[in-house]
Image (cartoon, rainbow, N blue to C red):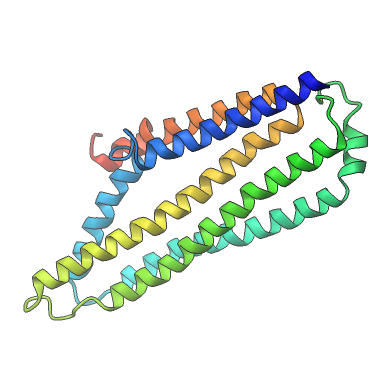
Length: 228
């Protein structure tokens, strides 16, 4: 049992290193200025410059509303998932008694099962706060669009500076939404912990590779950059 607990601790530390390491590399590390997020931020800058140079900005507000609706959907979904996991936490002893005899499930104590469920809940709680903040920032971005000066010819420099700030705010909202999406990915990896710590480690690495492939090597990234 001591060896099994040691393997669980190693798997948890592996998860933390992979998740936090990838997050640091993409936010402040060598991957921060390239990839899908950086490429789409350049498109946000172009979008807001175009917005500032036209009088009718209804389409811009509609586009932003559609984007913020996605954040609201995932935030509410995260609350539902946390509620479901809370119910599972209340019945953790019965679930453990049913699944523990299965050969593909690693043997663990009921207390460890509780910790695994709480860990999974924590990931979705983080996702909720990320999506909720992204949703609020989308509203603030809409206000920034509404505050853009109308007389473009007389205040072109002011309009462009305001557009740059608006795009930066929209980028922060997208960063939080993207972090929430990553929590969903890593929650899938964390579900592997219920099977076996080694499987948990494999699924964690698998998720990191998927994220890297989609954000730094995908066709969407090349198209947005204009490479194809």
